[in-house]
Image (cartoon, rainbow, N blue to C red; front, side, top):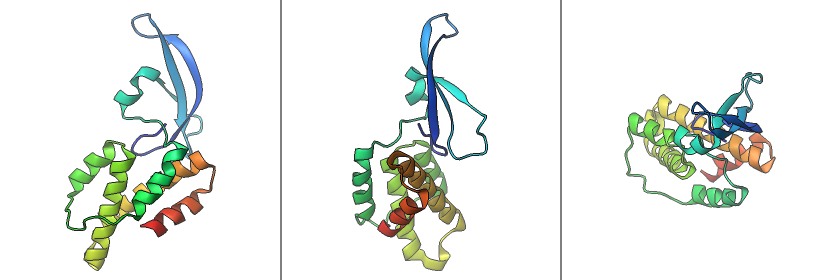
Length: 152
């Protein structure tokens, strides 16, 4: 599973009673690639979508993501920092990639006037996307990140 910031590995599934006393299926999960190896969380399976978490990208969708990264986009679209953050919180890979492409296109147009905040957002998006793809494909994070940056 993933949210807009982290990737999580599900390590168990249990059935426990919820606050109403009804049996409920829970995923137990922990952050991947962090120092918090001992930290774990649980969530009812039925609440995953409501929580902002989503399942990882399906391996078959990765080719489509790479194709989408290559396509040119309209460079005249303007984003403000707040709108970018709101889109990223949606945790939709296609919308996140669109933001990434817009920021990269804007970086080319504005050159040295490009905001450091936007550069940090680019780096975070690329890091998160490459970590997710690397986990799904069992490739190294570095090789996936290099491919993403080359496609941009």
